[in-house]
Amino acid sequence: RWEGEAEIDYVFKVVVVGDSAVGKTQLLSRFTRDEFALDSKSTIGVEFQTRTLTLHRKRVKAQIWDTAGQERYVRPVVLDRAPPSILYILTFTARRRCVARRTPVMRPMPGPVQLDVYRAVTSAYYRGALGAMVVYDVTRRATFEHVSRWVEELRAHADGSSTVVALIGNKADMPAARREVAADEAARLAEEQGLFFSEASALTGDNVERAFLTLLEEVFAVVS
Ligand code: GDP
Image (cartoon, rainbow, N blue to C red; front, side, top):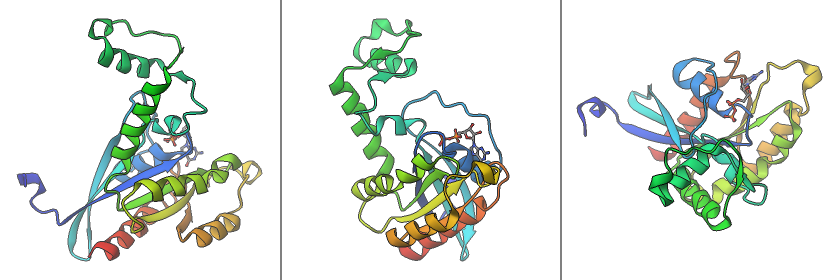
């Protein structure tokens, strides 16, 4: 143990999944830093942020993983072009002398490489996750329709069925006219799938703290 870790009783890994642009990164920065940050997601791979809190007199470090754009690689069928930053990384690995030439154009990626990137990122991302948030955007119905697929993916990759899963309908601050998913419909789905459910807004902060705390409490109940 390092000195700084001395008072930590538990580290809970929590992953946040869902379609692109549903607000995963913003939910994370709202919970860990109480900020609604400007997006700056240029990296492939995984990143996490932490927040340490006390639950039942134990110091718990929540280590919350963000996909950093990984969701674009989850459906290889959809992907036939890679963002320039990805090409850069792959080029770096394969042919060192090309490093400085970061190409500004989108180019097709070779199939096998694409699949390897996907596999490596996916397994590292889910490994050891005790909790998960599946996020959709209440103003985009398609993101809600993909929820079941995300839950399947979680169940397939996270260890066992003990991972606690919360369903979060984000952007609840948006005007009613923009809404494409009703809260009671989502609540029904959550009940069918055995998930916790809450709507939230990373923008206003509504329910964000409560949703994460509920999830962490439940993880605590499972592990202690
Ligand atoms: P991610 O791809 O799922 O990580 O999504 P981001 O966190 O990058 O957010 C995608 C977009 O939705 C950004 O333009 C955010 O500013 C916006 N956004 C995220 N959360 C909210 C929210 O609670 N309310 C509103 N109105 N916009 C949000």
